[in-house]
Length: 444
Ligand code: GDP
Image 1 (cartoon, rainbow, N blue to C red):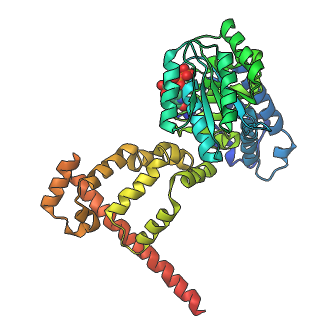
Image 2: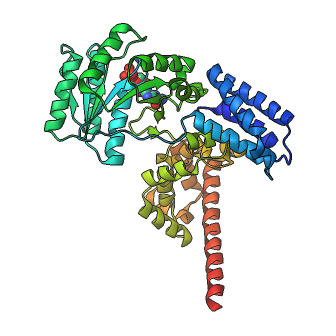
Image 3: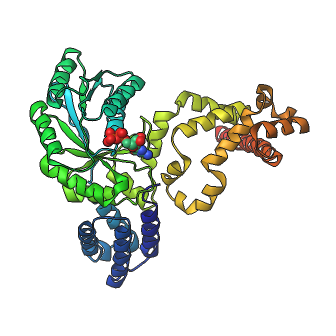
């Protein structure tokens, strides 16, 4: 996951100062030195680091800490606030035109993820805001880019406007605007050409499109994995075009995080979205405060709840909970529940959103790995429907067959069966306890 090294280092640094009843200038000096190194190692722009450290230092030796009853905590609060403001403070929203369609121009280097992100953004606009987008193929130099956008359009069941590779990108954008108006669409997403490097021809073409279609937003798509390069690219695009926001892709990779932490400070343009994977639903709004919280190991419960709301069917979840309480929960239900959790994303990412979960790393490897879940699923899938409903019928030959079918050792099948029975027992006890309590209350 991104930021892992930075998060580990910052967390161990702030841990040292956390419980201090008194924070001296020397403590602050030591802490900021470590924070500085951690940021530089995460490939954060050195000027940005310098300014950041100066701010933290100034505040950390100031009154808000010295006069606080919990100075250690106060210093951590300052680090978090400054990290949040470094990444842009408030979450920023998409601008929209007074009169539809709202035009968004997507720009960026080749390979940054521009076309994929155009599809993701269209998907998000429809899913979250119920808007109707038009995808526009204005990258006429790479036939593959047009095909790619058309494939995305098919996948999303959304219209794609294209005039092939012979037309002029400015004309394409203009004609697409007309079509969007005629068809009463809400958004026009123009996927422009990318190059391997920033060059003048490309910039001139982009400027012409900008002047013609007067976009409400120009999103610069940059690849977080390229670190400082991403920051340099952002700076050059920002000098030439009216960039309104940045979309940082591939934040799911093991990027050190430097780009995410420097871009706002260097370009003064907000990161609006982050790409968290190749799939079309893996684009997230960027929340600086939540990200700071995640980096500092304080979790991100809000995002977790949002993910659950988006992906888990609440009614069904309640039914499953009811089943667990009444101990009529079967392997079939168990499988379904695992599927719901999996829809929310990779488990280690979910764990990072739980405050303090980073301290349970050992547990993470033991109990929660996605691989392990895969094994459990394979075992359950090798059971017959009857076995899933009534695990009590399980005997040696059935277990052997399941082990063979799932490719897992028999000991693992046994362990799962045992854990399942224990879980049911525990749920029953808990329900009884709760009912007991309620009973007592009612008697009063
Ligand atoms: P373009 O040349 O800028 O249009 O880039 P593409 O949209 O073709 O993307 C280049 C590659 O990056 C493709 O293989 C995408 O699947 C991949 N990609 C894009 N966004 C993400 C992301 O957020 N995470 C990951 N892991 N891959 C991404």
